[in-house]
Amino acid sequence: MKSDRMKVVQLNVCSEEEVAEAVKCVRKHLQETETSKGAHISEHSTFHEQAEFTMLSTETGKGAHVSEHSTFHEQAEFTMLSTETGKGAHVSEHTTFHEQAEFTMLSTETGLWALVNNAGVSTFGEVEFTSLETYKQVADVNLWGTIRVTKAFLPLIRRAKGRVVNIASMFGRMSNSSRSPYCVSKYGVEAFSDCLRYEMHRWGVKVSIIEPGNFIAATGILTRDIVMETADKLWKEAPQIVQEDYGRAHFDRHVSVLKSYCNSGLRDVAIVIKDITDAVMSCYPYTRYNPTDAYWWIRLQIMTHLPAAIADRLYIY
Ligand SMILES: NC(=O)c1ccc[n+]([C@@H]2O[C@H](COP(=O)([O-])OP(=O)(O)OC[C@H]3O[C@@H](n4cnc5c(N)ncnc54)[C@H](OP(=O)(O)O)[C@@H]3O)[C@@H](O)[C@H]2O)c1
Image (cartoon, rainbow, N blue to C red; front, side, top):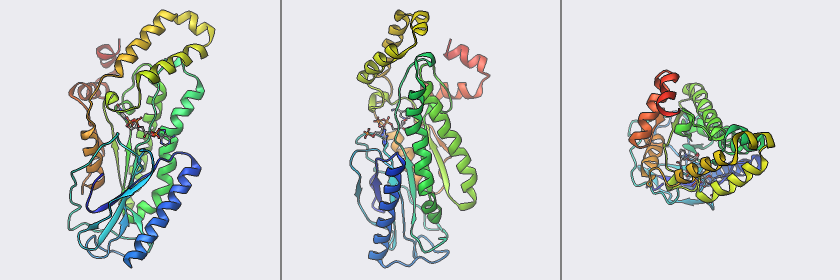
């Protein structure tokens, strides 16, 4: 994310130890920023006057780095920390926070403006082929990772009356066969984000959910190699009764469909980045963003608004 007003920190974190290290690192960085600026944050300061805080977004790109450091208007300064949003993506646009933005610092500790939880993994496989271990592995990154990182940074974000932006998926609101571990984890992200939004309202913290459609071809989340590797594992680990009942032909057909799915979807993640940027920087961010193409947008509306019997008939059976 490029901005002349904020500092973006990209951290590849998920486990408890990594998150604890990340919090330490960000706190230290915030203190240094504060010291170097000699800033004094008083209660009820306005953005223009004394504001100095940090925006943290949790990126999943390799190699954490801090880039660009600049002022928000004359004195205000903040940093953003995020957890990735698409390879090599660039954000050029930035909206103004607006002159009248006003916030209250609860203590003299420097706050953090935003956290973007982006890290995610995916897999496929019908329920009877999927081990409990797989459900746990996917949830550990997509759901527990999001919760762990968010909880760790919330005290800092509350101090800035900042933002939490969680990357869920269209599969956080509608399901698809053969994607149950992913759907379970993303539905969890949606539920967590909604609860957090209700609770954070009184603190002035805004929580947004990004629900990207199909960008498989643009990212590395599900490649043909991953599909082939996973397919081998699924078949080998499936109980004999499942192998016999489903049959190898059915399984192979299924894998072929998944392989072709790897080349589908939008190839440019710019609209996702644009929505994340809006969630972080707009004065009035949306609760949900749906960067997607027309097909998946219409499908999402139908799946979530029409009676399930009709939606299933249209898209599933
Ligand atoms: N692509 C789509 O069609 C699509 C659609 C809807 C939602 N999404 C969501 O968008 C987000 C980004 O995914 P993507 O499509 O950009 O996939 P991606 O290219 O595979 O990126 C996923 C990122 O997550 C990081 N990650 C995975 N496991 C991690 C762990 N244990 N700890 C820390 N970081 C970890 C990866 O880091 P490493 O590179 O170091 O492994 C990678 O940078 C995910 O939350 C995904 O669910 C994607």
